[in-house]
Image (cartoon, rainbow, N blue to C red):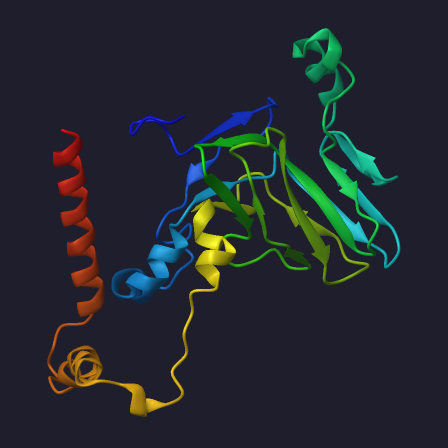
Length: 260
C-alpha cells in the first residue's frame, strides 16, 4: 500500500454479518438541517471526513449499574457478559477458514471492561492503512448519538497493527435497554498522518497576548471575511461554502491532471 493509486485504508471483513464500511456523506445520513448542508461547508466537511462503520448485527445492551447484559435476534434472551461473548455461530465460522494454528482464536464480539459501565465492541473488521497513516476511531461526526452510550475516541496505528478494529464505549444510563442497529453508523474512522499528532507538530502552537499583536494584514483579512460581506445585506448566502468548494474542485482537477 505505497503507490499513489493505492488506497489509504483497506478494510477486511472477517464475518459474514453486517454492512460494509462506507464513505461518510456530507448530510450525515440526511440528519443535518438543509440550511447547514447547503451553506455550512465547515460542518459538512467534518461530517464527510472518514468512513462509517456499522455494528455487524442488530443488538440490545443493558447495564444494571453493575453487570452488562446483551441480546440479539439469534439469542433473544438477556445474557450476561462474563466477561465476553462471540457473535452467534462465529467461532465455528472463523475456525472453518483460519489456518490450523489460529483455530480457536476468533476475536470476541463484546467484552465487558474492568471499569464499571464500560464495554468493547468489535466491528467485525480489520483495517490496514498505508505507511505512516493511522485511523482515528470515534463516534460519527455531527450525527445523533445512540442514547445511553458514549464512545471513547482512539488513534490506532493500523499501518503496523493488524488486528480486530474495536471501539470502546461507556454507558450513560442504567436499567434501560439500548439498541444498536446494523444499518446505522456506530463508528467513524478518520485517516490521520502520523506526524499530524506528533509532539513536534502539537508543540508548534502560539497564542498572542491580545489584539495589539494583530497587524494591518490581519485587520484587512478580518474586514474581508466579516465586515465587507455584512455591509451587503442582499448578498448571496454561503459565500464561504461556495469559495471553499470551488477551491476544492480546482485542487482535484489539478491532482487529476498531475497524475494523468
